[in-house]
Length: 483
Image (cartoon, rainbow, N blue to C red; front, side, top):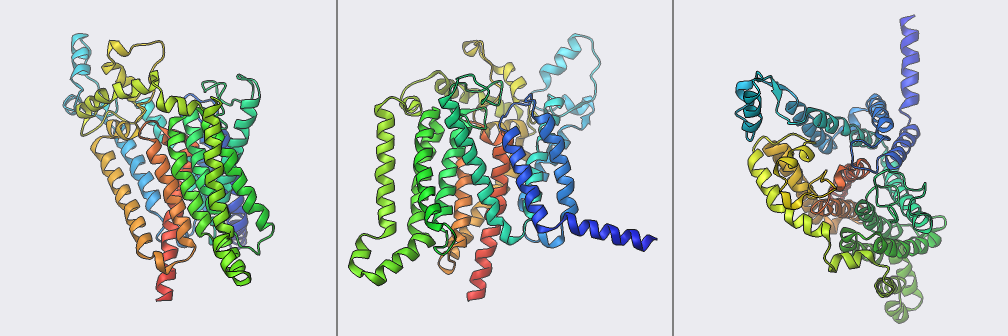
């Protein structure tokens, strides 16, 4: 009887961790994240659906996990668990004698003493509910990473295509939003940039950063198609045409971050296309047929020059016809830009006051009110610092900075390995480079905004961290086999 049940259990486990089922689970969850996790606020109603399902997908991924899936691929998971552990430590109640000695807690102790209230045991965080919310928010990227780690090697490239496809859906939705009512049903969030092409997001900056990253993904995808692949020519030129559609969308979002990132994104896409497998093999075929002509008027040279000309023309027309809100915001003064500059001294003061233990993850909105000067008081309120590098340090203190430094060292080491084995690898190195560029875009966007506090964007960021690690390992393995 026991053997029969054990056999049935083994059969069920074999079915649920089938490679195809693991991939479909990854696709389903990522689709759910993009359609319900496009806002950074903690009162977004769709989070009631997303987070419990993220926990279930985590359980499924752990059920399918095998030791070989994790071998040499766990760094990103460790970073997430380190942040999770730090949040748990911030929630542990401390005795009053210790709590009052923490930086910038004197004011709270004085208020309690003046009111005649006995000092209770309190956690390190100044807002336990917000820190608990931040803790639960990690379930979303963690589930996505675990699902990705379960994918077979053949499915990992398809995972990138899934991410790219969802980003393109966001771009398509933005087109319909711009064409429709400024407060129509196509806007998914109650607090959003109505009238703009925000796509699946609540904030135009986050949409623009994703679109700039999508340009890089498309450049990588079309560059490394095989000429013998089905519909390869259609995919190649269709992908390039899609880039030309994304460029004006970035202009009309009104995001300076998107505009600034679009230029390096286009450059990266052009270089991928120029050095890619598809255009390279086409070029070699043409050289064999007509040497001199093919050297001067090759497929990839035409693509490169045509791309530059089209992008420059599109940008110039957008500015000329006054459709480029991002261009106007980049070179013209605005209230938000001035506010961010005025915030810097305040953020530096907060960092100094709460260092080294931090104020607690998710507490910025409440803590900022203590420091908010009367000159900056207005009908709206500041829920994020608009500089995630500083906000992460304010809320997490020295432990968070240490985790960030470890992650930065790992990232630099991956790029160093990529450069070291560059000449000994062919096309896998470009996948790693593409993943690194997308990650850098999100990190650069965090200087003046908070894209990594959006569930869908932090999910993409950590998936691409796994992709970067996988690509570097593959490059090193291939180089050792060739040596």
